[in-house]
Image (tube, rainbow, N blue to C red; front, side, top):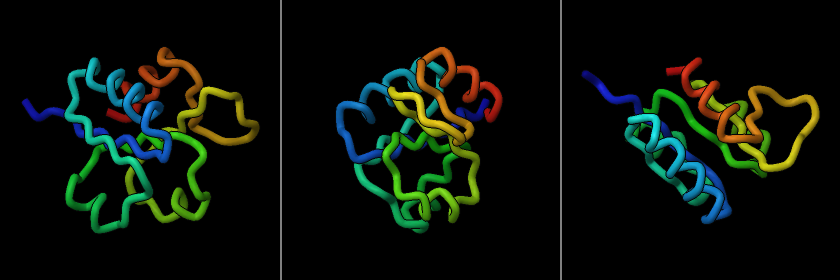
Amino acid sequence: MTRHRIMVVGNNVMTVQRVSSHCLKQNAEVFPYYCIPTPEEITLFEPHVLVLCLPIPEQFQHQLLQPYILWSEQLVNNISPLATTFTELSAYLHKFL
């Protein structure tokens, strides 16, 4: 059985670690990335889904070919899919994986 690959991207190390730890509980391979990856770096890992820990440059999101989930511990208007709790994050992961 193939394990799903999740890439967790963000500049805040504590947030990326916390989100990565939660994603590991989903029985997935998790690749935490502590800055903005290049398209080549994303291709190397071949994630099924990315979790982008805000703030992330908006132009980065627009160049992604993979599904992504935005993570923020604060409510942000008019962006989707946004998870602000681990329950919401789990629901989105199940939707995409």
